[in-house]
Image (cartoon, rainbow, N blue to C red):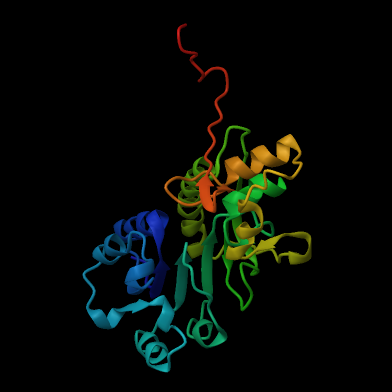
Length: 261
C-alpha cells in the first residue's frame, strides 16, 4: 500500500470510477471532499466507496472556512487529488499539502481551461483531450504531468465528445498514477497565453440561434452539435416568447439506414 496520505476531491462518474480504482490499489485515502448535495453527481456513490465518518467528509463550498481547513490539516494529508471537481482551490487550501495538489481536467491544456471543454473544442476547433496537472492558484493553469489527445469527429456532439473524454480521463489517470508514485515525472509549464479559457456563462453567447441572422453553415452546425446533450438545455430558437430547444444528430453513411431500403 502506498503510504502517501491522500485527500480525494471529486464529482461525476469519472470521480467515482477513479476512486474505486484507487481503493482496489489500496491507496491511503484519508478524507473525501465532494460537492454539496444539490450539486452532486455520483456523490452518494463516491461517498460509499469508503466507510468514512462525517469528520472525514467535506463539502467543496466550505473549503474557505477555517474550521474545514483545520479539520483537513488534522488528517495530516500529503497530497490532494482533484477529479472533475467544480470548486477553485485557494492558497490556504493548497498549502495543506506538502506534495501538492493534482487535478484531472477533460481538456488538452492549455486549450479549454475552465468550463465545458467538450463544447469549445467543437466550436473553436481547438484540440480535445484530457490532462493531469498540478494545481496552482489559477484555473487549470498548473504544470502538466501528462495528457492524452483525442480526435473530434464530425459526427460528435457535445454529449458524445463528453463521454469519450470521460473514458480518456480514466485511462490517463490509470496510466499516469503508478508512474507518478515513482517520482519519474517531468512536469511541463503551460503557456496559457497560447491556450483558451471559458467561463460557464460563455455558452449564453452562442445558445440563442437568431433566425434573422446569416450563419456560415459550418458555424451553425457546430453550435447545434456542440450544444446537443439531452436532457440538458442547449441551443434554442425563440418563438412566441418561448424557447424551442434544438438537438442535432449526425450519422456517417455506414450508420445511416434510409427508410424503405
